[in-house]
Image 1 (tube, one colour):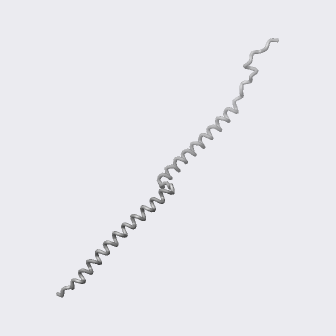
Image 2 (image 1 turned 120 degrees about the vertical axis):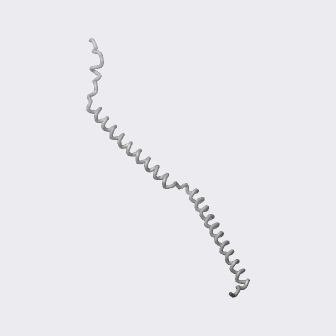
Length: 97
């Protein structure tokens, strides 16, 4: 077997180190970009989908309850409109002239 010259071993070591350093740099840049995006989203005052869906469900329930109460009030108003009111003549004592 022929031995490889030391130069190629050194070159392979430097190339491996450079690739490792570039990998670390890529990870660092990815983390920095993610932090910047998270910061920008935080400034926009956005809500997460789960929070939005929970609030939408609460709003739907409130809307359904309001509609049910509206129907109930309409039914009560109709019921009281059908009942004759007592006249004030019957409740007042008769004047003696």
